[in-house]
Amino acid sequence: MAATVLALPGPAHGAPSPTDRPLARNIEWFEMNIGGGGLFMNVGDDRAHAVVVERFTPKADLLFFNLHWPWFHLTVLEVHPVFFLGFLGGGTRLGARVPLASDHRHELRVGAFLGMDAYLFHINSFSPTLSIKPHLQYVYNTRIGSVGAGIDVPISFHFKETMMGGDGHTVSVPPVMSGIMVYFRWSVGRRPF
Image 1 (spheres, helix red, strand yellow):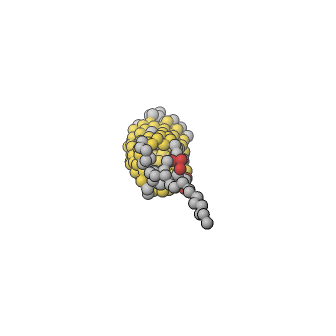
Image 2 (tube, one colour):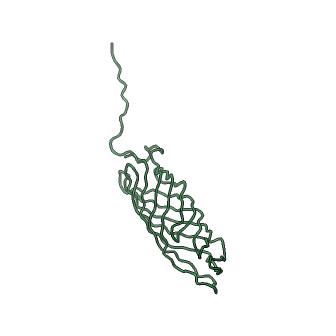
Image 3 (cartoon, helix red, strand yellow):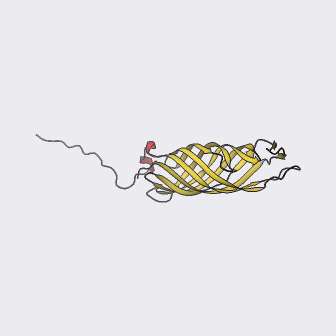
């Protein structure tokens, strides 16, 4: 009696390519960006109270569910909590992934955040804005997450022309605020290597 053996292809040697990775194993569940930078504003017509033209602002972003595909990534929810004189709000972040090594551990991410933020523009007064933040990040991936560094260029468009601070002074709000932020980033997630 002859036995027939069915040969099935075995797993490929080495790290799987991005196209072989199931999405469930390409999620950074939680990420945090910690750093700071400067914000720059046009001076409004303000005769009552001085307006800060440039200001150091700490950065502490919380990101949830960063999904990875072979050549791009999508952060479902990015939250900006109140952190000293920082931003309050949230939105989403989308970008391209550029591998720097064949094992896909080193990569650059280029993209942008889009959302709504409120900024503590004057004493006890948050100014609502439409916020766009192009980014460039270096990321080193591990089996349990990633670490890296990044640069954001926030561009915020204010919805108000004037606002009253907690001290009773009325100030003009500049239409556009911009700046640059530098930060350390880390994440926790499942990475198949």
